[in-house]
View 1 (cartoon, rainbow, N blue to C red):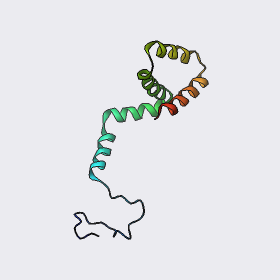
View 2: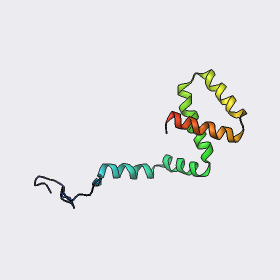
View 3: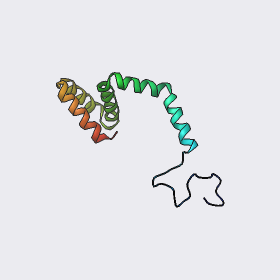
Length: 100
């Protein structure tokens, strides 16, 4: 442990396991805030109940900002004409390309 260290560590610098990061209070509070947020809890619940609709909502939200209005509407119409399996595969590919 360093002499000038404010927070004592369980491990000395030499004996600290690789990848060990002491818990940061700020990050712990962020996690608690996120998990107790009403909107976050509802989104997790919707995702468990209807994963396909949530995936479609996420992908279409990202696509809307990247396409013109006409191109977006053409895509929506073409998507709804596809079979369910083809629609699932299309949305999965788009989600990977657009980023999570």
